[in-house]
Image 1 (spheres, rainbow, N blue to C red):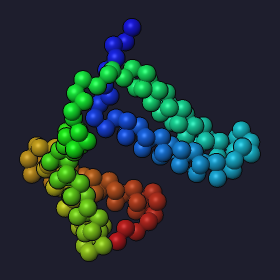
Image 2 (cartoon, rainbow, N blue to C red):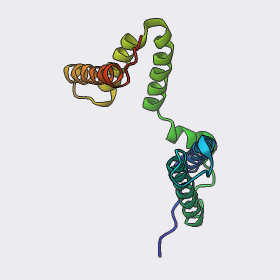
Image 3 (spheres, rainbow, N blue to C red):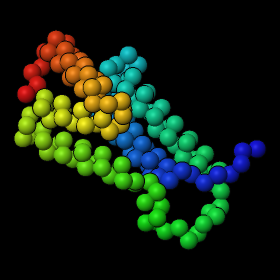
Length: 155
């Protein structure tokens, strides 16, 4: 028998967000054609999104069924949130917000180059030269995909 265990911090909220997103994808897939035919353009997206919804529901039921009784009832929402949202996570969220603001001011290429470089230095931790090379390779890949495959100009 599986030992009951408490869900990881934020796990229930994460599953809720996954369920909402999967439901939205299912609704968008339904709007493509509905159940017009098995070979219709909306059938594969509906099957994929439906499987996502069912899988998330199964995971939620398993977590609910195997939940251990809370050992530390004194833990407040604030202390639980402090365990989930650490300083590095807050810093990266701030970096993402600055990136979104910089897109309008500096344009896609400059803002993305700075964002990727800082992100790779922060997350990859292999030094600035490696971060610069990975940033250049990433931007070259994005340029190639959008220029040659999609034929879309990115400002």
